[in-house]
Image 1 (cartoon, rainbow, N blue to C red):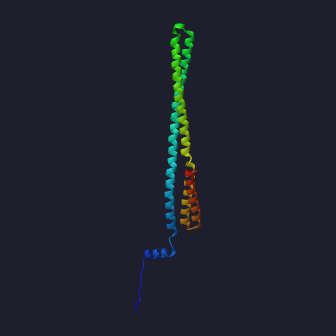
Image 2 (spheres, helix red, strand yellow):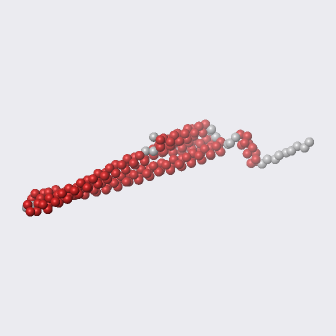
Image 3 (cartoon, helix red, strand yellow):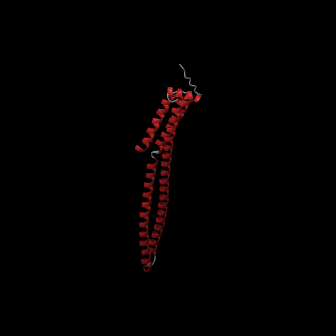
Length: 188
């Protein structure tokens, strides 16, 4: 009877050994880290987006506040003119009183319009400030989520280097906490 001999190379031997013992730790950690890095990239994007949106609304609030301030300054100027016209109407001869009283009415009408515009701009500024706060509210939770994801990646890397599988449990906890904070950012 003839015996068959099989000669295997190093690569074949390593593959056979891996299949007998399951997926190597380094391979598991690499896949886990890649998934965490992808999740972290999404979290980073969302955190940056919340900051940009908040900045946009904050800039809008500042712009509206500046316009309101300008409008109130114009209101003050018209108020000064109205008071001068009223004073002039008291001091001038009766023949010219009517002209100055007409100016008092004109300035009063301008002031009323300016007041409405300034109040509307002030309200718009307040609304934009509230919108900025709303837009920024998820940011802190997203930052915490990213921190836990980074801790999880670091622990997984240390586990791969030291072959301490118990560190993967810490990485898993970090990943779960990161996912929880990311979810809380938009749910609460």
